Image 1 (cartoon, rainbow, N blue to C red):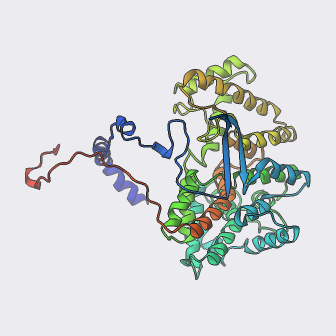
Image 2 (tube, rainbow, N blue to C red):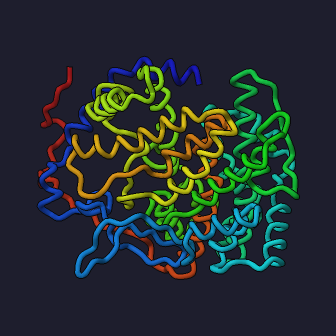
Image 3 (cartoon, rainbow, N blue to C red):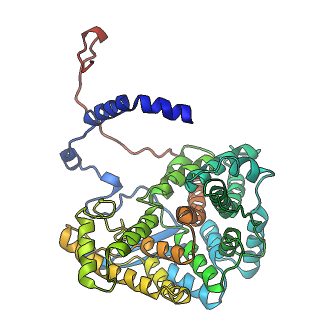
Length: 461
């Protein structure tokens, strides 16, 4: 690696010049997108996604019909036609964990009976074990400071341990999917423990998952040195997993799953591609940005309850004067939702209770104030086509922060949940697909003639 870095440092200027050449010759006139009616990001000017497929797995609603018009409405999320709020309410009323039940629902299209759920949970518990020496030879021997890269590497390496890795028949893909769903918590937490020990110099703690524990409980059990956690902590993490498990076929990582699946690729390659998509700060990494933004705000704002001071900071964020100078208030706004994100509303209701247990009420009130003021500031500073509200990342980051989860695991925990949705969509694509997904791109390059090498002029020195 040092040899590579030394070589790279010697050619840095050449790379910079080549990058500039690439940039100068790859710019497309922004007017062309309007001229040719290109839906950038596969969305129209109002943020509505271009219809590219059908699904029965989940549904997102952000508008309601009033006469002949569709008007912004409070957001709704349905898993297999069931309102997510009803799912959460039912599970909490019975004081049990629900991620496994939701996994069953998303994969098989119906709620399990008590017997079916017990059997399914037993299958997952049985699969929650890695190949012999995998932890030692794969996770521990190459620790990474990037947990998503570590998770992707582990997924791709599992291909070599599967005798039927390339078989994309439904029973085999189902088996692979259940194994990955069961092992994502193990791969993620062990990857973090390797990083914490070998890179951060902390004690190495490896707890074996317990078959009698839920996914949420096992995450806390494996992560914490003393394996201790409160009932409220485990239930709130379970709720977060449920809310992140699925969000329609059009989100970036799930669409990636459909695209790669349509090519006939194996399960490990498909899920690794989805992980790569989720890693981006515009997708799964957004809650990290929320936490980092608030940490900066807490240092710069002297009185967290002063509306004028908070408002001025939010204006400075939008005007690229503070934090990362990207001009964004992270955690606010969504590609689909307008008036509200139901996932954010659900999490907020639990965060308030958790803040009391953790003695972090003041921080919760600070978040609530920003949630109230940010849409007003955005409406004043930006031209918007629909409502702006807090999205799930706004409160999920706070939940993980209150639970004491390391920042490095925020996005992997998203993946631990979303592997369920990816698996359901992969199988839906295999069952109903047939054609490789291939959208159209229009070339706007000018025609030119080939010039012999000796006749070319350039900026050679």
